[in-house]
Length: 88
Image (cartoon, rainbow, N blue to C red; front, side, top):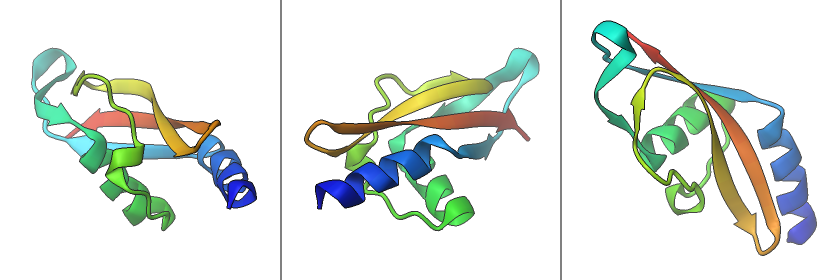
């Protein structure tokens, strides 16, 4: 189980997840991006199903830009998922 988590962590750290959402002037989002949005985008774009509870979005993302979202995959196994939030 731990080895699978380590392999998943390596895979997650090598990819970028793009989250498209409505944004206004200056890149401010209408609403925010949370762990469910990241999990849904990860599944749709990379076919990786990850429980949203494993994603640690400390504060909802409210600006377009690039972020690192930590994922707790197993005790002592974490990954940083690169997220790119783009406005529509």
